[in-house]
Amino acid sequence: MLTPEELTRASDRLTDIYSQLEKEIIGEMASLIKALGDPDDIDYLARAYKDAGLFQSDVTRLIEKYDPIVQKEIKESFEKYIEKSVNVDNEIIKKAGLTPALANEQILLTELNKTANTLRNLTLTTAATSQQQFINQATQAYIRVSTGAFDYNRALVLSINDLARQGIYTVEYTGSGKVVKRTIEGAVRANIITGINQTATAITADNCDKLNIDLVEVSAHSGARPTHAEWQGKVYSRSGKTAGYPPFSICGLGEADGIMGVNCRHSYSPYLGGERMYTDEYLKHLDDEKYKYNGKTLTQYQAEQQQRALERSVRRYKREEYAMGKAGLSTAEASAKVRQAQGRVRDFTKQTGLRRDLDREKIGI
Image 1 (tube, rainbow, N blue to C red):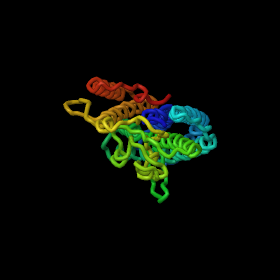
Image 2 (tube, rainbow, N blue to C red; image 1 turned 60 degrees about the vertical axis):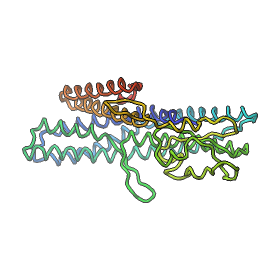
Image 3 (cartoon, rainbow, N blue to C red; image 1 turned 90 degrees about the vertical axis):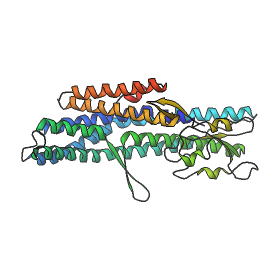
Image 4 (spheres, rainbow, N blue to C red; image 1 turned 30 degrees about the horizontal axis):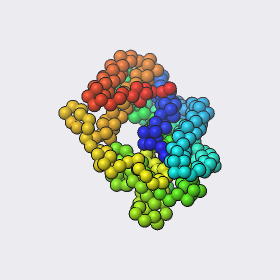
């Protein structure tokens, strides 16, 4: 079993690497938009479309440069967190007087490769989306200047601001053909958390099968989505046949919105009787409001979500600051925004008592 906190941290290092990639792509876009020259020029859009093709090739090469680093980190993250999960399960099994089965290495290898390929394919879509973002911002600069709404310098600043706010995003197609756009950070976090969690629990299930263990205990965390809050922190029967325990199937095992589904941080471990990890009293107060901020009382989940939003704001303005520098423009305004955003994080953590996480405020490695 992996705790919800461990699953949250599992993607941090990879998110940093992709943040560095995103920063370089945005910086390159900003410098190219600046190099296009005055949008009042009749040939401006023709130059933009010509450069867009070259830019897509440049982004593809940049992605390929980072791919070996990404693949190495995926392997290390999987191995680190799967080992943690196996160790927790084995301790539970040993305490019951049983001998743990050997972890199924084939499960690890298969799931690791699946996640690595998914991320590689998702990342490659950023070459096309980045090209379109470049065209969009060049067009916006042209419209702003040609209509007389803004002068050249201000139009350039606004386009770079837009790039920093949007970030770089990926495109994914669901089984039904629906197009899903997500920031590269969101896509990486979701795929790594889901991949590691599903691998860990597949190994747990394999271990339970080998040792004929039917009962499992599900983890719990504050702020779980309502459908998950109903079943978290309890003990279930995998077969649905052990008297006194509800069937594990009610947790939505194998469904996209069920346990270990997309972005789910719930996990489970073998349960062999005795004291549970999560008592009924603990679960009852899991979502109590206990943090004070600007006259409001927040639950753990609400406070964490607020902090994540403030951290995203810091990263946005740091991207803006970096892009302005790459375009040869003044970074004074963006630097001031960074300081203001950091001040809001400091104030929030001071009022709530939550720990400030500087790693979540940085961009890049």
